[in-house]
Length: 75
Image (cartoon, rainbow, N blue to C red; front, side, top):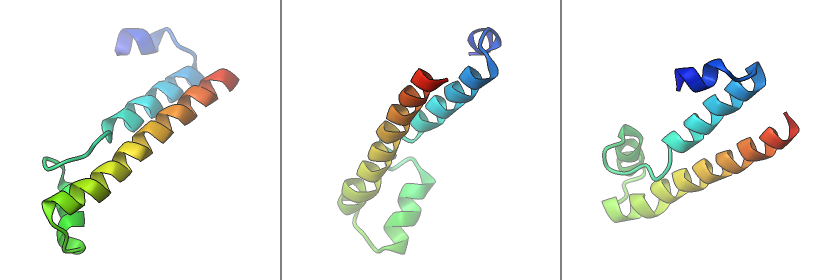
């Protein structure tokens, strides 16, 4: 990413960082520490945690990407 980011303006680099961050939380599952923390704290089964935590993380990721794309139209 460094060669790509090196040719971008500061605002575009910020959007690139936000897009990478949004994509990094897409469908968090059993190899994520947050998954197990939520599971144990709320006393959920693995299936319930996938249906709640993982779906919430996916919605968060997609919403973040949509916001980044919308901001790219402005910046």
